[in-house]
Image (tube, rainbow over all chains, first blue to last red; front, side, top):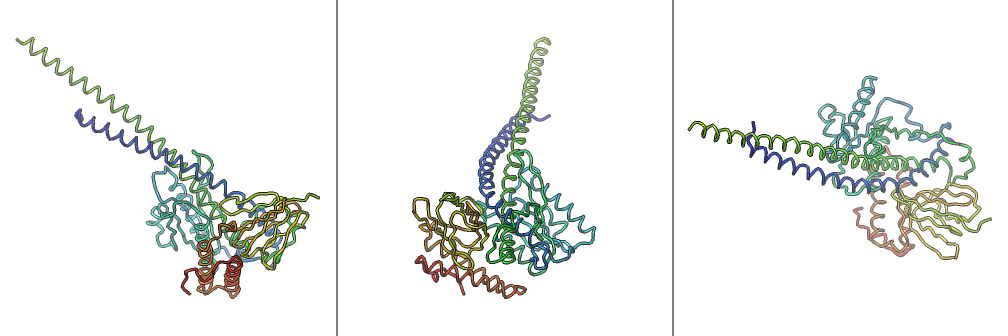
Length: 290
Length: 148
């Protein structure tokens, strides 16, 4: 049985914890709004890019001249998994859900005898995968210094991926990140970026365009940009998801702390009452003995 | 035929401008061009340069872009640029940064063994266009602090 003083200390410390988790929740809520705005603002560019890409790729996919970023290397042997996670923890299942999906894919690929390498973005995913698959790491992008995700960050990651592709290090690249659905729901997503996935669209609309200089030149210019845009979109989705996950996790933590305080207070009051009763009994029985 | 069309300048991070315009002068990769309402649909690659937007009342606004591409339609022009700055915001500082980035690209293209000649040539051309852009608006391309 803990003493009254112990209980009191315990309650005090849980109260402090509750204050911290409450503060973190509110910070996450503010950051979430900003992250959502950023994701929203980036959408027109990505949408336009996708639309133009769809038109171009539909025209070029059939021809022999299709760039390697679109047509692939003709093989499906070596895979690059780009695992995008956060730099900080305390965000519920945010990081582990991405890692889980990536690990699952990795095991599938390895079972098929494919060669897999991993590029990590963000510290947390790296830590979780290091023990098992540390030897597969080819590169790590540190985002801890990044206050606000800019297109420049995405471009650097995309360049890193494209360099490795040009050097012939892999055939297929897939991004792993959390798609933001709502504050309580973030969906771990795998998205193939190389070779580019052609989205279905009405190809007839694209045929009307004049291309200057020509389709292939524009496509060559566009494909690397498109990879960067997709990485950027993934980074933004991930940032919003991280804050959403943290908000939910901290909300739960705050509520749990409240429950715990209630329980501890009950125990504290009971034992205080018990101590008083015991003292009374002692006094009364002492008086009776006289 | 309408005498204005919709012009959007979109960067990856946000929509920079969205206005009705009378004409847009674009730095196409193969030469400058002007788009006016009723232009045939086209998709044009851009080089780093200046975009001039002429509003309905004839006022001109100038933007500096670092390349990208434009989608021209009958009644709209959408310009997708990685970076776009109003002419007034193009300071030596901003330009230095752009130059440094172009230099880095050339460097990276040269270092990469597997890179074809084309890639290096493209990066060098980008750098040259960037320099031309700077000279054009009166900024010094050599101030960019970059080891050669």
